[in-house]
Image (tube, rainbow, N blue to C red):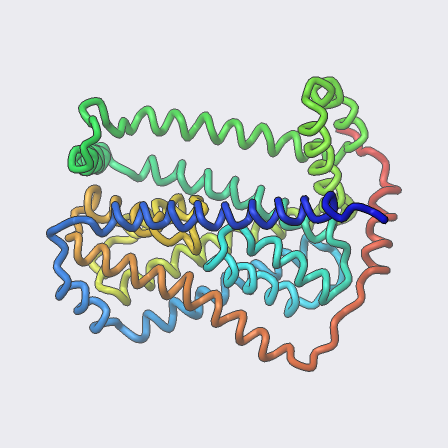
Length: 384
């Protein structure tokens, strides 16, 4: 008889780890919400009026642009997969990922991979690799967004933001005498970060063009790492290698994926602009909307359910301290935009996609995936 305790232990550990991440996410989100709504000068009646006076046409445009962004994301994944998968399935997977992330942060991508595998029989490793590539592209696009916003940001706005955050710190009893937002230092840090991301991108491109040579070149570095870290990194590189098969056999797909990524971010920017018009922030210029969009996007990096709390706090900080919007109008507008985009747009789109796929037969693309893998493996290293 075998002892089941060793088999059950990993499952129990995995469950406890996921539970801990959910609890930490809820705690972090609750902390951000406290910092956001703790102001005693918030006018509740003004906030109610912002919700009641919503403009329907811009709201519908917001929801439409939200759906368009998800559809473009589905098209991008189909482009990266390189097999004749239905855009319907990749779009439904993307919508499902957004819907799940609204409740369980960072879980949506896993659910997305599993869903697409069950509907198409494409190997999990290949789907996961395309998701990894998408994340790398999105990180690069976010770095560009932050870099541009720092050069759009003025010194006066940076000083106002510093003063506002310092006042918050004092109210919380924290030392804030040395706190400041130095715009020049932030720009230097952003340029340094951009240079680092570009270096990583160059290494990945070299890996795409010459995988064997790049592995041999990286082996001295890998051998210096602990066994566990080395195994994880080699596994990630193997997944990435699987995901770039289509880019090696069809380099034009890489350019298409980048163009689609740019369209996704532009689409989200105008989604946010429509939300500002719908919920009482129509006085903002496009430059101001761009800054608030950047701040809230940074907030979405925090592992809270659907960005709750972090989205609100970063948006409020930009609107109130840097742009001079009243706290009530800022909090009502940011809250309404978050609800419309994150808690309504993604879940409703997936529900509509789910309704349209009732009775739709799944695809079996396992043979096409195997043929793609064989074709990619047969390609020799290209000259640098």
